[in-house]
Length: 318
Image 1 (cartoon, rainbow, N blue to C red):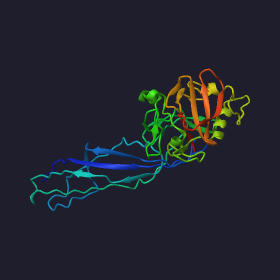
Image 2: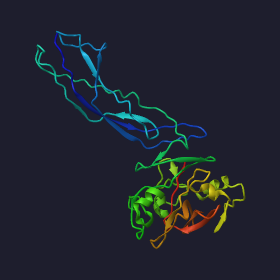
Image 3: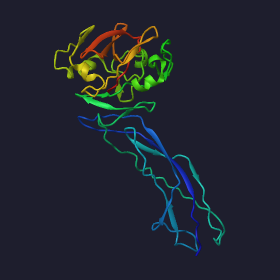
Image 4: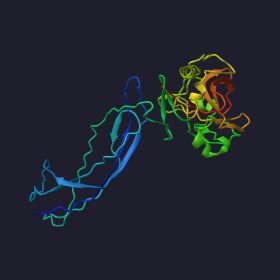
């Protein structure tokens, strides 16, 4: 009987992942960016092949079929899943004992039938991932799904420079230290955050399926956390007690409002660990509406600030 020596094969596949999610009250319908997952197929198992018949004229039995699979593929995006063939590198050596000479015969089959699947995404349980691969916890407050940490995407520039419309997301880090962005998130001028549009509720620099909250949506958050009066039209006033306490880091809402300070219009930084400033996407003349939290105040401040300031950003689920 002629024997076929075990063969070493290395095959690399690439799987492109996209997503579709259909959920109810605590979940959301959306399509998000996909991800690419690849693995090196080098650990092979052998087993009897009962379905295939060898075509060698002198030996049509006694063959061993080698196979491999990866059981560790994980889906980190949301949506429809499609599969595409990546590069293939196959090395096969056959036995010299074959009477008809030494040869190799390679047959590669890739099953692309798994072209769609669905999975559940739940606010408060699952994270959201931005275009740079940074992940953020989420929190459901009332009917709104918020990021539970400040957005931190982009390339740091000096506080003395203005952010520009140059196809690169730019950010400030408090006192020009990357470590402060890691802890508190980036600080953004209004135009950069909005990606140079004035459309309220735009995606801006938020991940796909998320957007910059409007002034009205920020009020919904304030009002939900305040059993007392909460004036949506207040200007230069603290109100909505005790929403400020609930929104700050360690507060009952889970919003975890970090007191990240701000970048001033002259390029300096101030108020780290004492205040937090959160842009809305709603303009007021040449300014934009903003919510402020303070370490010494249980309420929330509403004011229209110059768009050249650098403030924190929290994204809201569409």
